[in-house]
Image: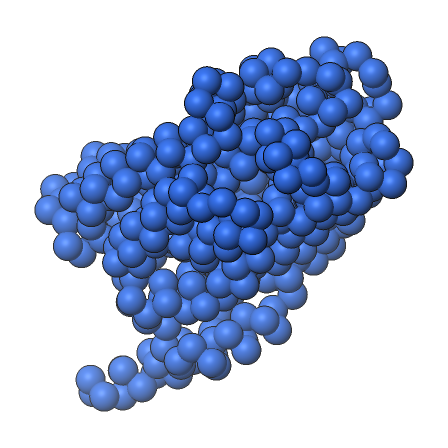
Length: 431
C-alpha cells in the first residue's frame, strides 16, 4: 500500500503549491489600495505567475522524462519556497511581479510531475482516484487556504499571507526530500511490485527516439490536441475563479476580505468533493465494472464541462448567495472533469513521453492563467461589472466541449514509430 502514501504526499504538495498561488488573490484588495491599481493592472499582476509557469511547461516535460520526478520536484520546491518569502520581503510592484515570475518557474513541474509520478505508482484501474488525489488537492487548497490566508491578511497585513505560505512550503520541501522515491528505488512488497508491473503502470525511463523526434511526433497527433485544447477551455474558467473570485465578491458583492474568504471556500469545497467522488472513485468503479473506458472518461469530461456553463447564470444575479450557488455548480462540474483530463496523458502517451504530453497539455492550459486574469480585469475595468467576464468563460467552455467530442477520439496509447524501431532493434540484437 506504499503507493497510496506516495499519492497522499503528491496531493499534499499540490495543496501547498496552491496556497502560494492564491495568496495574491486574497491580498489583491490591500495591494490595489496601496499601489493605486486599476482592475486591468491588477489582472496583469495576477497573471504574472502564469508567464513563467506556462513558458516552462514543455522544457519541464523534457526534463521530467530525462532526469525524473524526484530531483526536479525537490529543486522546484526549494526555489518556490524562497520565492514566496521574497514576495513578503520586497517592496514595490516590480519586485513583487518578479517574485511571482520566479514562483511560476519553480512551480512549473508540479502538475506534470504529479501526473508522471501517478503513472509510475498506480495501475491503470486505480489511475482515476489516484489522479483525483492531487487534482482534488488543488481545489481543497482554496477551502482551507483562502479563509486561512484571508485571516492572516486581516490580522498581519498583506505580507502575512506570504510569510505563512512560505513557512508551510519549506516544511513540505523537507517532507518530500525525506519520503518521495520512484518505485524502482522504493522497498515494495512482492504483491505491490507485481500489481504495478501487471496493472499497466508506466515504466521509469527515457523515450526511445530522443527528445526532438518525440516532441515533433506528439505535436502531430490529433488526440493530443483534442485533449490539450479541451483542457485549456477548462483552465480558462478555473483560473478566472482562482484569481478573481475573492475580488468579485469584494468588488461586486461588497464583502470584506474575511467574508469573501469564507464565501470563496464554499464552491471550492463542492469542487473538492466532486473531484474525488466523481472524477476519481466513480470513474474507476465504472471502468472496473466493465464499462467502456473511453465512453466513461469522455462522458465525465463533457458532463463536467456542461455543468461549468453555470458560470453564465452566475453573471446575471445580484444576490451573493445565488451567485455562489451557481459558481459552486460550475466549479463542481469542472472539478470532476479535471482528474479525468489529467489521467489521460499517462493513458495515451507513447512510452517514456508522459511528462512531455502532460507538459504540452499544461502549457496551453496555463496560457489561460495569463489570459483569464487579464481579460477579466480589463472587462471589469471597461464595464464596471463581472457579467461580461463570466459570459466569455461560458463561450470558451462550449469550444472546449467541441474539442473533447470531435478531436480526442479513443483513449488508448499512441504507438510511436521510434518505439517500434527500438523494440525491433532490441529483438535483433538479442537474437
